[in-house]
Length: 534
Image (tube, one colour):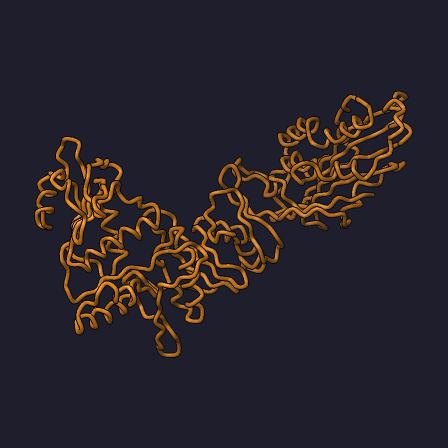
């Protein structure tokens, strides 16, 4: 069969006539369709169609397996293609988008004998012999050098720009028209893949608008293109120390990307919804620069897709932090956890009791908070806190301290006080007593909303040895009653790296009139914390 006979058989809905036909210059077969959600599969599609366009035309059949006969692939058997699994319109769009210029007359159609033999074929007719078709250089393994890519810088007015790929194609075609089509060997050494600036006619170039950044932005784009980057949605622009450019996704209908180049950090691409969440999270900054406030996203892979719950941020005035997604899919900024033994000015709060305890262990949490006038501790949240305290890590820490010293003291009741309990403060205490009624060991938790002198929510959990002799008696005279460093560390650094009472108290605070989709910004317990011995 020749090429026209193959075309006739496919159009006659009789693909079985192609069996035993060898692959060759104008015929190629693949067992399954291209997995077009994978960028490398789209590259393969563009390469195959482009090869036929440069070689006088041909037919690509999807749904026929081959076998090797004397080093030649022969069409062996039909592997029916499910029509619902293929979007022919998407294939047409990808061919037009990824081959420069778009080949004319390409047909993407079905050949189905209605007896179980259904294949998809792409028919590429012969093109103008004086035209060379090119595709973007394949995306190599991320991080590896690109040796098959060229760029042509041209001087324009007072700036240097990259010659668009369409112009490179025009110049190559002119040369071919004058000297004839080079051999395959020569062509492979010329310009197998010409790409610089825009790959899409009419669209801006990568880096267009920032001539001094074009090289860095193009290199970043090429390195990260494998995650699904598409054509630019607009020109590049500056934001602080970063160069940014909005990009479409590789696939129509998918959320786009933002390319961010901010030396000395490695460049990243961020899904557009995540980028918008980053900007929104920093809008409360008094300086009016959200990114300078909360920092720029970082990722070891170079792509921030937002598939997880946490996006790491660096370089912001607010200090190290993360963008964290709640269970209701709301993104909020949270400071990174910082544990230390430094005393803050809040460390001396709630320490006026008389007589003072013999030992106080305190874990203190400071939660910076915007819109402080809207905070209150509602009745429902206070009741929730009261119910949780008996089963909290703080209560567990007190029990563990006794059990490790041979005691099995019953858990004490949590009572309000001795400090303020109001719409803006909460205080609860649990006391373990010796047999004679003397206070032996107590636990306390306190929280206060921001006031005139403080723009943060301050919360702390205390474990107090009121009287070591009473505690020893409560433990049945156990000689190891004194608390050592290991016990102190066990209390201050509970599993998960957070102060033991931060969860229940975070849940107690609620903005006035807030609905269920506005939880406190640090209810995931990722505040900066200081453990403070008294």
